[in-house]
Amino acid sequence: MSQEGRVHSSRVTPSESVEEKKADVPAPKKLSTENLDFYYGTFQALQNINLYFRENHITALIGPSGCGKSTFLRTLNRMHETVKGTRLTGQILLDGRDILKEDVNAVRLKVGMVFQRSNPFPKSIFENVAYGLRVNGFQGGKAAIHAVVEKSLVKAALWEEVKDKLHESAFGLSGGQQQRLCIARALAVEPEVLLLDEPCSALDPIATAKIEDLLFGLKSETTIVIVTHNMQQAARVSDFTGFFLLGKMIEFNTTNVIFQNPVKKETEDYVTGRFG
Amino acid sequence: MTRHFMQELDELQQQLLDMAGLVEAGIHGSVQAVTERDEAPADEVFANETRINQLEISIDEGVTRLFVQNPVASDLRLLRAIGKMNTDLERMGDMAVNIAERAITLISQPQVKPRIDIPQMASLTEFMVRSSIDSFVKRDVDLANGVLASDDAVDDLRDAVYRELMEFMQQEPAAVPASVSLMFVARNLERIADHATNIAEDALFFIQGVDVRHNRRHVPR
Image (cartoon, rainbow over all chains, first blue to last red; front, side, top):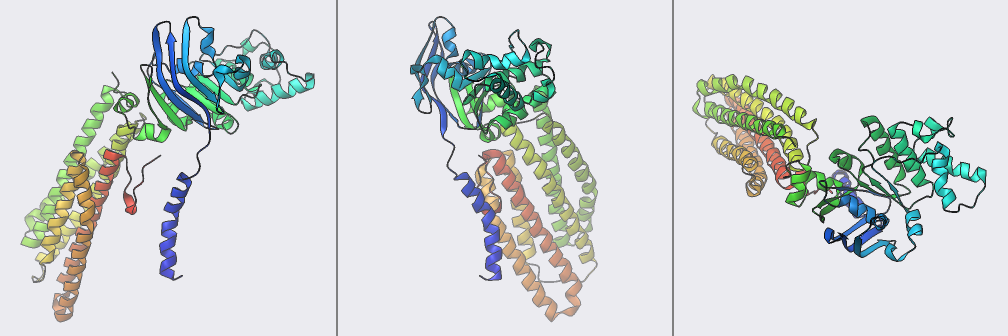
């Protein structure tokens, strides 16, 4: 190859490699919904939601209050069934199997959830994490339970802060620590999907940053769906973003596209704050 | 975003357009000083440079202030475009000053005959500058693409001017100083056209979210 040829090819290669990277096979769809409609009594809260969540990726759901994003999140591990008078049609597929036809406890073991307000049990830090194992019939001795509790607290980036006070009440922890404890509790049963409903809305920026770092660390082993009102948080942590409005999924795309060049005007108006 | 943010963004765009107006006038005045051998328009170019530099700093400060507020989508692309256009316009202003300085030198030297292609080059360059700014103001994709398509023509005209002046210098050694000055004028015009191309690319990124730099068409994913 001539000198000129080499120079030429070295110029071309980087853009080609970018193209190749884009052409990578996308991660499989871990969880998806098909034609999902949801009703509170006669009020239709979700209309024909078709959405998927790629394995080992973080997907953020955004939208104004009342748009249905939290309702949608709750359907993903059938938490909606705890509310009387609700009705759901359509399919929710976990690895291609409809979770609506599975045992609900088995579903919630695979699809864990963390709520807006941290809700530790009135027990010790240790017991908060061990509780899920015990009620799910964990077959192991004390040492095994301790190992899982430690592993979960490490994953939730809380271990170093609580390892010397595992048997103290969880209520003695700060708000941010309590939220990470709830994440540790959810992680103890090794869920395949983790749903988080505005997990940082009651936390200060430092506690928020810890949770966000933790999510980055968790996505190698878990598929994460996070509902957030904080647009910057969605832009920071997620790979994909879905925008909900009035019970409909308006736009779903990579987070880059949603925050740089959204396709739908409603999305543009919402993310730029021109909404309403 | 808040109303305050949008107001500041509007003001920033207005400042950029004021700067673009000064730069356009500077390019026109500097070429006029060369072609008409007139110092007056050159002096005006020198006088305007300070204002252009002030605007550059003010726009940069405004862009930084608004970036802190985490703009997204079209606001994000607009701010990025304003920041980059600001740099390009300031450089174009400097190049107009370079041409005006050459004009002053040329006026003091015997007139060189062959500069037929310089007015043509200047005319095309000014058209590109105007179109690039208009493409941004009017959000006009066709205008921006027209600018990109014109860049090669300016390069060809510069090459023709160089060739002509080289031949002329070989025939008339006494005309070398003036010919070299004219070569610098052509060089600066060609660079101004390159910056106009950059502005058209920035306008396209703002309007469509597509990065067309370096002969590619990249859509962020």
